[in-house]
Image (tube, rainbow, N blue to C red; front, side, top):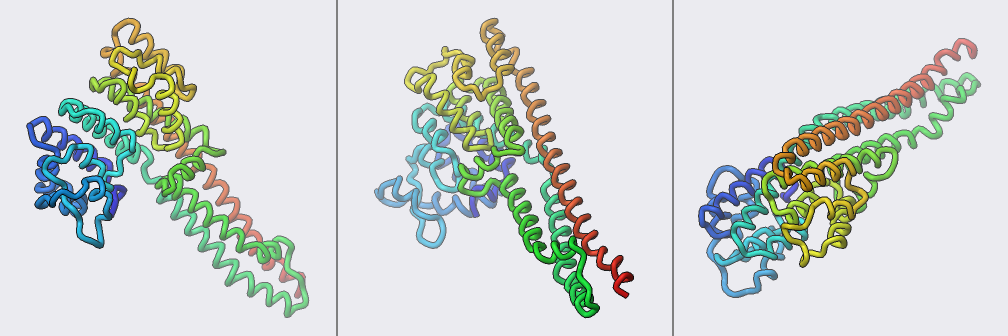
Length: 367
């Protein structure tokens, strides 16, 4: 069991409650222990509880945390472990940039703010899963049925016609002969389509390679627009929650759902404003302009709000606009994939059926 087995809505609630416990005065380890005593996160309890028993002696903390969870004795977290040390556990699967933010501050208020940002990020991911809906299962069922039909005709029906024509001294129609010769490649093509859909939806490792493939044609442009819409929506949402601009930018880049876009944004922002010169007075729009990927309309609206000192009043509308764009791009991407694949598979099935019926029509000529 890993972090992917826990749904985003559970992670959103987990980080929200963890921040609440820290605000109430509990230490990070005490906060995690409190959460594990409640029947809220049963899947996470299985992985985390071994780390929260009686603390062990003075072995290096980093060395202990990097040991695998299953199969061997697990070292415990000491009561004085920092929040960064706790979140570095493999089960949380947090980006290095986010762990670095927790390491750079010891203030409880900053930790609570970052946990709120993480909760918002997973809430957006849960919303994205709802937007995508059930288009993938439907397409996979369609592909499975199509593959079954093609396989049945190719390996059961057409060989019978081939034997019958051979006994009668005739030759199969060209279309049917072509299907018999290359039909296995059609099945392989359907299998590759199913694998491409799974990659598009589940993002298996390695993420960099997977996300690079998702940015290729024919849907690369829409995938990029969707990733950037997730970034702008998350940034506006975090800023509206009074998250510090630097933290909001970093967390928003991890919400893109594409590691290639995430690294491009982070590299552009870190080059524009090094971390040691970034403070709350740094205009967010100046930083966003350093990356050509960020939509110009979003930068323009944010810039006007900053210049008129009406940022707080404008952020709700800016968040709503970004959410509308995200919905639109996601629906267009899903609908275009559905339409193209349904048309392609329907044409393929029609061609296979025609190649199967042609020998029947020609039997009268042979007789």
